[in-house]
Length: 151
Figure 1 (spheres, helix red, strand yellow):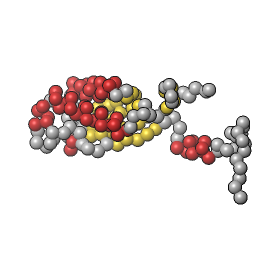
Figure 2 (cartoon, one colour):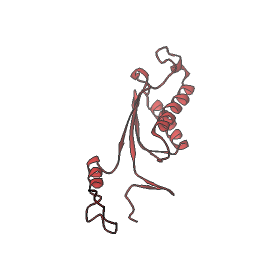
Figure 3 (cartoon, rainbow, N blue to C red):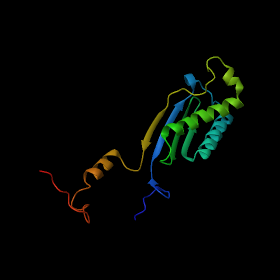
Figure 4 (cartoon, rainbow, N blue to C red):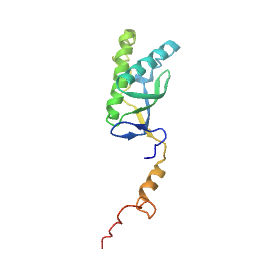
């Protein structure tokens, strides 16, 4: 079997997918305005990722939003990963900073309800479409029984 570059090999499956995840603070309020607060949020997110077997490939905490490039096992759902990261980080951060929770515009929440998640891999959509479309060509059909044409 040919090993795929950058793929993760588990006992029952092989995967190679990455997610770009972005979410914003409630009302896009600039919260992470000091290096100390940025470092704290990065540490919180890293801790949650470790607990949930999420790999953080890149992360940046901006004053009013977070960018992450993550990967996780196919057995996990994207929704549960997002809930773990956003929900867990909000609970921990607000426990450490009750003054933020007390401010009336927050409504007790750190993050906006919305988020962006995009998938990416090492192949473009066009490459995969082409690969699938050409599965039954003569070259790729070696060792397989020929397709029976229906009349």
